[in-house]
Length: 274
Length: 152
Ligand SMILES: Cc1cc2nc3c(=O)[nH]c(=O)nc-3n(C[C@H](O)[C@H](O)[C@H](O)COP(=O)(O)OP(=O)(O)OC[C@H]3O[C@@H](n4cnc5c(N)ncnc54)[C@H](O)[C@@H]3O)c2cc1C
Ligand code: FES
Image (tube, rainbow over all chains, first blue to last red; front, side, top):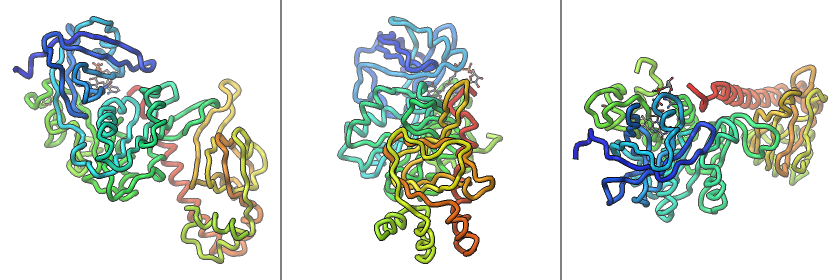
């Protein structure tokens, strides 16, 4: 199969998550075998006549019949994507990229830290660890959004919160009086989050500045650099290491990432010229 | 008083303080509970207390006539509220409202200030701990100002 040629998928469901984010559920037209991926991997989504962009897969890795993507409308392609309707057609290449370290994290506490749309690439990890619950220690999700209206997957988070085997702490940057949750940036949740720093794998996804400050707090709590993982974003074209568009220092984000341990990219992280 | 001492020494704010300092602080302390919705204090009131949160959650709010009360931060277990008792004119600059049932140790500001004046080693310890809290809060506030999840 040529990795540069997209396969066509049909939109089965389209729903708005918040004012600027939406989720599409896709089904392959050509391939009846379904779609397999690992949490953290992404697809190149082609909106015909507009362009192609990388979007993480945000569905359940155990469900192969449907492909799920949650996207924030920010520019040319994503805004056009936001206009998709049921039965609309898109092209898919993928899955690409290195996944979150869910196998390496077996036996550890799992600390997921997400900001804004960054919850989408981490949702498959939640599905995976909850369906393999006995292999992991504590599971903690710290999630920061701009306002209560911007909380992604809100109903699903509320449902998960009622389970006794996962801690979910949500915080928003600003709120008015009827909000009874936390207010403050996601980094403020780290000093008191209930994990064991020696045996924890942290996976962080969000804007780069948020990830930078999050890492500072995790290091303060005593997490080792090799146990902290981030998902990086850069513009992409081929998605498979041919074109060099996504170059990040010595790494290509599409094929060496998008998930990296902090130890691997510490020398690049936060550098302005890269 | 013995049980209050037990509670106080478990709080991160006083961790590592020598027992003579703990005793001085205890002389200014009382155990207080706020029901959800009750205010610990309101903007412009005299600031004569310092709160060490044992459990629960408190919203710090600023009132704006156009929007109503805006929550600027929430604080919970292990955190402290208020330094206006240390800084003239000793007036609160925001409201503090319990969102959940909240248990605090309330320290009398004048009492604590006087003890800090007469025992500079206690004063220095308290200032060091407060400086640590200032630093964390200012950093958090700076990140909050970046509007991280908004449009680039
Ligand atoms: C591996 C990987 C996984 C990704 N996963 C997801 C995902 O699951 N969901 C998702 O919504 N996005 C995801 N993205 C980001 C997504 O690819 C970009 O938002 C998209 O390429 C923007 O394309 P566009 O044509 O709509 O915007 P453009 O027209 O290219 O950009 C328009 C404007 O939007 C700004 N912009 C571009 N990207 C972003 C951004 N990420 N956030 C805010 N502003 C931006 C640009 O600076 C520009 O000003 C991922 C990116 C990578 C590399
Ligand atoms: S996108 Fe082409 S090399 Fe990464």
